[in-house]
Amino acid sequence: MSEDQLAIETHGLSRTYERGEDNAVDALVDVDLAVEAGERIGIMGTSGSGKSTLLNLLGTLDQPTTGTVWLDGIDPSTLDDDARSRLRNRKIGFVFQQFNLIPRMTAEQNVALALIPRGVDRATRHERAREVLADVGLGDRIDHHPNELSGGQQQRVAVARALVTEPPILLADEPTGQVDTETSERLMDLFADLNEQLGLTIVIVTHDPTVEDHVDRTVHLSDGHVVDEASYAGAMP
Ligand SMILES: Nc1ncnc2c1ncn2[C@@H]1O[C@H](COP(=O)(O)OP(=O)(O)OP(=O)(O)O)[C@@H](O)[C@H]1O
Ligand SMILES: [Mg+2]
Image (cartoon, rainbow, N blue to C red):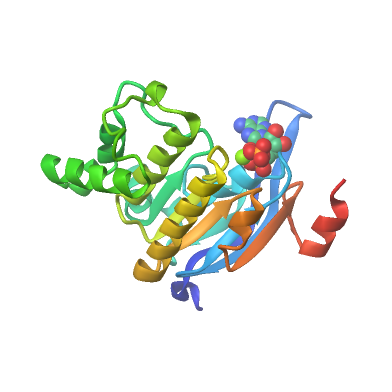
């Protein structure tokens, strides 16, 4: 077995959302994926093709209907809730499509929060939060609440929160969806630096062709299935 070589592996991963009798959505169907440590993968596909569903399963935020995920060889479904949370906090930085920032907290507090499960002292948590916010270009917005930030700025707070724990794996759902080209390039440069310096494994959902230049390969989803690039292109309207 070579599981320990891989940052992420899935076998036969499927997720059906049950919405009462005769109303099930097969959002993800039989997905086999192998991501090496330090690899950068782009997930592409039309709206509703299963990208966020896949990312939620990789990030242990949701459980598959059938099939298995391994993170560094560990199957999170074998862990209890506490152990799974610890695994997630240690291994995964997650940038949500909808950001999921806490409204009553400032940018700095939102980012610092991610370090609490690590047992980092308060002063260090906030110092690290300010550093990472500066890295994403928000050094002058640390005391703003989410509703005092633009969509792209909120997105960058979400990126800072994902990176502040220095996770080995970054899962990012459209992290450049709301930012201009220059900011997008800057985020991609930051991800590239972390990839080179720390071997960060990156799985990034994107529609953005400029992001495609910053990944090693892309995986295309169509109706929950992994399809090869040619058939994906052929299926485009
Ligand atoms: N909680 C849910 N209950 C029922 N169906 C769901 C649920 N979440 C997602 N779906 C359905 O599953 C399919 C995949 O959804 P998913 O959110 O993974 O798509 P996506 O590729 O991320 O799309 P987008 O690019 O619009 O974010 C869609 O058809 C969606 O309607
Ligand atoms: Mg989505």
